[in-house]
Image (tube, rainbow, N blue to C red; front, side, top):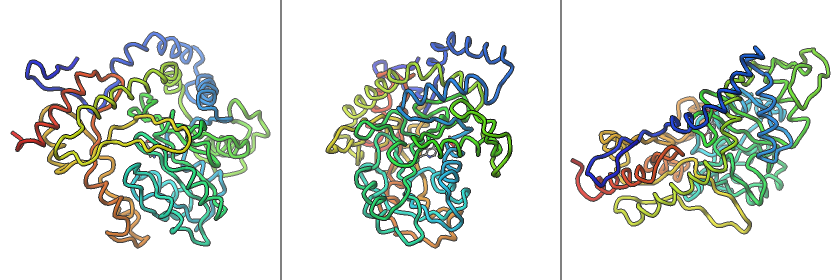
Length: 394
Ligand SMILES: *Cc1c(COP(=O)(O)O)cnc(C)c1O
């Protein structure tokens, strides 16, 4: 384990590890993997069907459709919604690139909007300003620890008759008025990339929806467009290929790990909350730390989940370098706003179009946060941050 600060030694605190979690869950994972080997079916098999059922139960979704990644989940969900060439999808300018590249891959056109500077999620006013006669979909993205303002965004969607597709890739466990992220509009996605709150040991993702037609279309698209070979909820209709699908099946090794980790997801989320609270307590008032995560109070109950502990600081890149030299890993979510990325240059945006998104890209840094961490690790990170901000770094 890591050392604290008492004896004057530092770190290391990697940005992410699940070594201890994996060791604790290994007996459960091993017995599930043994079943996979006995079945001889390593993709789209029994563990995947079980995981889809368990995930639907955990989230309260009517349907959970397992796929290869969160990115594929977005592309297939947008396609299942019937996105047509030239249809516009409103996406925040500050998010992971897949939120917008999925729109292009599904044949649509991303239209960017600015973010709220406190939640880092799409600003409903900026989203409403981006609506044109070609707008079909609005895509709220729930980042770091809380959801976008879904009451306001559902109003915008309702007023302009838009479909709501949530990029809830990071938002497992987050709820809005008791409804799980991804289920407030047509549907949403989850990513099980290893660092996510529910992480696999490779790539995997899922689509969540209450709509049987969407679920069935997505389930067919992930498997070459074959309606007769979908899993679980959908009995075979025919074995004919009716649309051009892709191969985005989930594999049973990932499903086995995810089933085991799902059994302690509530505990993991509670642990993340304790670590985040410790960070906030220790970092409050630190000079040079410009903003700590702030969960915005809403009129009804919301459930924040700390996937990432994101702070805004002065001299962000220097701090990242200083922490790295002292054995502490950090990440920059996200280094450049989407409207200024080369792959979207043809859309014609300019620097200054979305000032909140641009500023977030310059000032934010993600500190380590995962269940394997101890409170001593949090102390180590905070002491180093304080040492950097209060004197010139050694
Ligand atoms: C992780 C993530 C994705 C993509 O998920 P993958 O499983 O890595 O493809 C999409 N959107 C957001 C907001 C994410 O955080």
